[in-house]
Length: 254
Ligand code: ADP
Ligand code: MG
Image 1 (cartoon, rainbow, N blue to C red):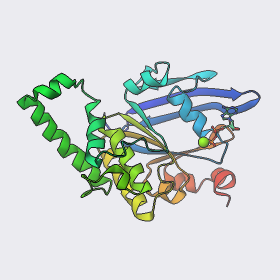
Image 2 (image 1 turned 120 degrees about the vertical axis):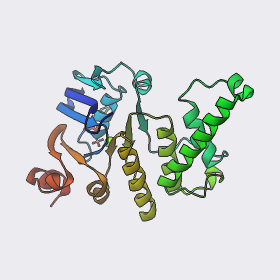
Image 3 (image 1 turned 90 degrees about the vertical axis):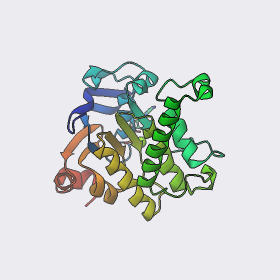
Image 4 (image 1 turned 30 degrees about the vertical axis):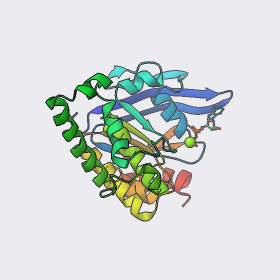
């Protein structure tokens, strides 16, 4: 999609747990070709918002749209519409190579059967070469060039988390939602993560990340939405949000 076109949008979301109001009239628009951060203090509603966007939770009121159409009910159906969520704990095939972990993610995107794999037509081999080249490119963005043949369990914790992101995008989602992707990464890995997210943005992916690392958010994000006590208190570029007195009071603690 063109940069700036809404890919995932919510309007008027309300969600309560008993008498705790987790979301109060929350709206957000995540656009193609943008890195969008969701920040806010603990308990401000970030996880609940992501759960409502991906249909893990049903909001009490409000709507969610994927590419302008009402979101289907249920996370699996939302996933089939191209909205992918990466969790904090990697789900890799540990005793399989780094490259094969990515190729496995790609093969989910076409209806490859064991039979078509066995027949190995020229078309299949071409597709295979294309996929290997694309996987290699994505791994290089993630700082994993030269490690394609390593067993995934030989990677550091941070590299595993980067590989998990590459694996998720191998299936070519249109929206990628990341839960604290920079947590537990070394400085070099955080830099690689930034490079990977920018490369994905430049390919038109819509990225939404919940992130506590404010320096990282300010460095890589195009748009920041700030939640406090279940409400959106600010939204804008990192510069705009950083200068907002309400944000300073609620979140940055300055
Ligand atoms: P954040 O991710 O920003 O830390 P959450 O979305 O997890 O915030 O939580 C928002 C509010 O909703 C908090 O007050 C939290 O205690 C409450 N909450 C979240 N999930 C549940 C739940 N399953 N049951 C009860 N209360 C919940
Ligand atoms: Mg949370």
